[in-house]
Each structure stands twice: as structure tokens, then as C-alpha cells.
Length: 100
Image (cartoon, rainbow, N blue to C red; front, side, top):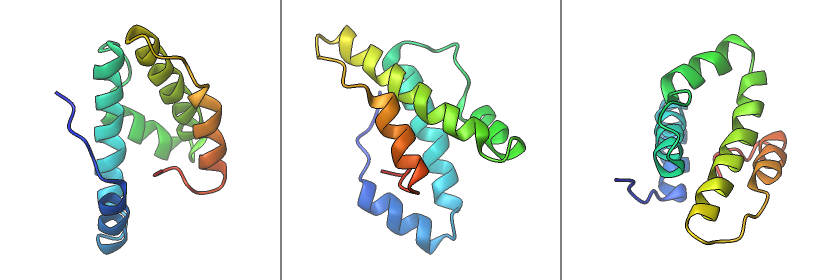
């Protein structure tokens, strides 16, 4: 079961914990999107985080795009129109707004 998360609280906690909560947020969001899209065999949150560190955020940009595509797939499964979230998330990450 995926729980609703408050973005404002995540941003505040990320600032207060000097980014540690941002890591937890990243891992949890990855696992939640995998669960919602039905893609349980996809890269787990911990592995995605490690690959992002190892590749100096290059994998993080790829991850943003793929998460958007997976959410579009999940929307299509629930009879909602896809919104090209992959490009939106990629653009947000370029401007430092990836937590949004």
C-alpha cells in the first residue's frame, strides 16, 4: 500500500536533516512507483541511489525520466490519460526541483 506523502514536509525534513531525509524520500518514492506501476522487478530504491552516487547523478537523470514513464504506464492502467511525465521530471531535475 502506497501512503500519500506531503512534499512540504519532505522539503523541510530534508533541510533540517542536511539531506538525509532526501535520500530516504528518493528510495521510498522509487519503491512506491515500482509498486504502483506493477514493475516489481525494476531497480530498487537503494540500488538506484547507489547508481546515482557512482555515476555522479547521470543515472539520477535517467531515473527521473524512467519514473515519469512508469507513472504514465500506471495512469494508463487506471484509465487516465498519460501526461509525458518523464520529460517534466527531467526538466524539473535540471532546475534543481527534483524533490517536487
